Image (tube, rainbow, N blue to C red):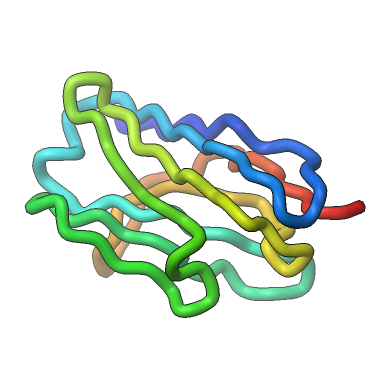
Length: 115
């Protein structure tokens, strides 16, 4: 059974940076596109970044040029480098596959951007 474990969140001031990590059990990275999602209070979960098997990437307009998704297949880990953080980036961040279904969601990692 695939397990997804997110880490790296925290409290950061506006303009700061964080690097999130997502470790996945099982070899899913070579099979599926992977993505970072986030869910802010009272809002639906949204996809913010995707990395395809080919290595090509996609970003939501709201994070483009500030966030960078990457992966390490050997470590079965994906990363999200977040720069120039804004208060509206505050949310719980999750990783999962990007397809018509999902593996069980992990606990996520809280990112709070506040002065």
